[in-house]
Image: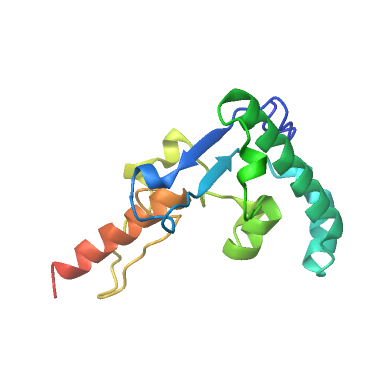
Length: 163
């Protein structure tokens, strides 16, 4: 329930270092670190109307406060001194995601992440229309950063079968 309540002090979070997967992901001598949490939309609903009008001060203050809580938690648990080494910080929460994706209620992964909507049951990359392919969070294999990359690769492979 901490996720639904947007309780960043007590919710689970992930620490992602993409440099461990792809060695040239970051500029030489640097690392890009992601602190990630899942949250429900309801907490952010109160900021939506003003945000859509371009008035983002309250939203920015709220998301920055949550980001600093996450940084402090990561410092305490695993990465002492993290806040002192940070050069650039980009913070994105629900309304940020909505701005970039247009997804309903700011859904990060496109559709619901349920067993009924898992990989084999998602929309396929191919369509009945010749030369129309789909690569996105709503198709196979699924949403999120890694899922969309996989969708693009699967789509490319399908197109190349007929090239």
